[in-house]
Length: 63
Image 1: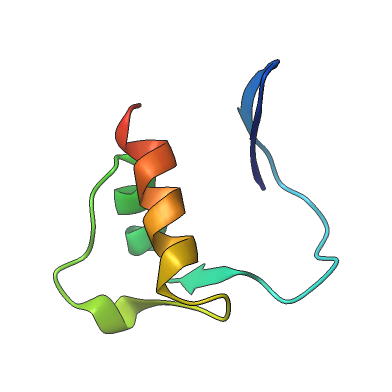
Image 2 (image 1 turned 180 degrees about the horizontal axis):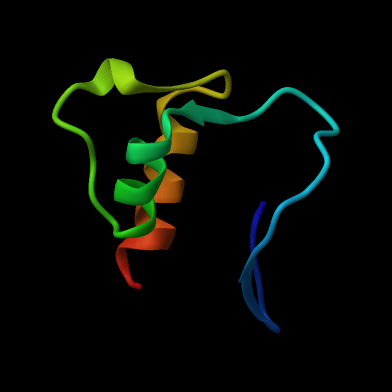
């Protein structure tokens, strides 16, 4: 789970409560954490749509 608010940001494992917003393979998750994208966009998908993917990329691009 990635969280961010006025008090700070964090990344931690969490028990699933709902379907995942963004699903990917392990290598794609590493790329996301580095603020990068896989060359093959089929390696990740979001039930929430492309806007959720854009927000995550924007959040992680600064780290």
